[in-house]
Length: 134
Image (cartoon, rainbow, N blue to C red; front, side, top):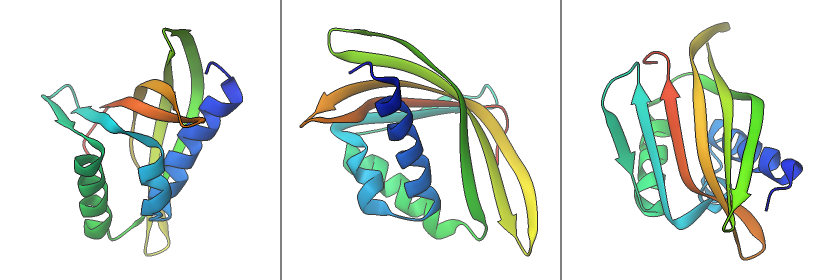
């Protein structure tokens, strides 16, 4: 599963699903045993898993937001595939629009482990290092 197009599509489906509050699609990008973790501004690592816990985090986050978020993915590097696991890194630029004003909220780097599950690529591990809190 080292097809760059499939990897880009997965990252973009994840971001677009979050930004449009499409929880069904958002859930579909993670394996059932997935983990999602974050480090914000070099703080402590926080982790969520399996998929049900990730979805609770996503749902709770979406319900608390007043702005319209836009996750912009760029600079994707497919580091390689070993044992059926594809490792990637890419940048995140996070913007929010509220009251007609667009603000840069944060930026960071995603690292992932992607596996093929049922013929579809899915995140088994997704980690985000954010440069600042948002």
